[in-house]
Image 1 (cartoon, rainbow, N blue to C red):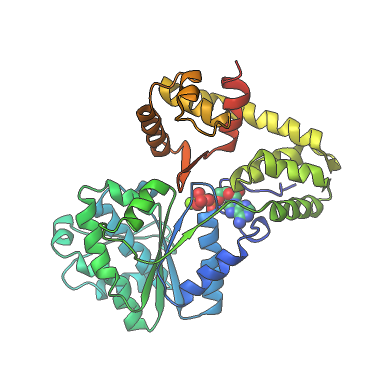
Image 2: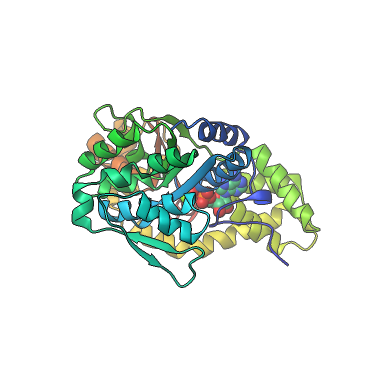
Length: 377
Ligand SMILES: Nc1ncnc2c1ncn2[C@@H]1O[C@H](COP(=O)(O)OP(=O)(O)O)[C@@H](O)[C@H]1O
Ligand SMILES: [Mg+2]
């Protein structure tokens, strides 16, 4: 039997819960070509949300095409241009012959090198001579606008892990170039999202950066307990099992409403359930999850400095004024400077999340492991 929960893949249909307001807002922005920026830590549901909104928006508006680009693996400007051109062309062509035709038609100064894969239905790859693109990036950067105008369509370009652009060789210069083209587009909008909150914030909210005020900012939160509880009930019922209200609430609580972990713990609990899932089963599943991840947690923890660990210990203990002399002394923290150094290093390493000055652990299971095992020893 197929298991009723999904994690590590895009959540769709029955696996997608909550986010009604965000979905409606994003669909509206897509249809009205309003630029949107989405920020949240990884595994909170950005890709799933964008995917859902994109499908809905295209259903509602047959002139709309949405193209998805993931910068996860893209490390240079050159790779970016090739990917952008390829994705825009495939999102706006219905057959590969048309894709090849478009690739030829919409470039005049650049000469695209087109390769057709073994399965031409979905694999047309486009490459350029890098020296040419360096001197004429305009044709790639304005490609979507030119195709949209010519075909009488609207295009939304979604770019995932956008913060990776900060690692290109001349990030500010490159971003200036992008923005100067993209802001002139009348038939194209951009949805830019990413997981590194500090880097995304730097790109989009620092007034000296090129992408400052580029579009609507959306901070994606976790999933509401009430939605999770209803969702668990539903998915258990769909498979002929049930879950008690207390057990559902416990899953939400133990995972701190983290979308990915909520589905994973629900899955582990479901697997252990014959008829009705109880609090005891959830606790057992949770212990197994912590156990399963503990090796990974050891590796993460070994890479941290003693000062960082001391600060984390104080944070986990719920200390309110960590910078007070008494607390610093108790946790062997050397100085207030050490605290701020630890904070920024931990945020940079994606261990902590900084929401307007409030620091919290990104991974609720890691926080639990630290508290109950690592620091408890
Ligand atoms: N709306 C949702 N409803 C239920 N589960 C979700 C939802 N969004 C995300 N998830 C869970 O979180 C996981 C990660 O989602 P994903 O969209 O890939 O996050 P991100 O792109 O922010 O890293 C999914 O595999 C799924 O288990
Ligand atoms: Mg994603």
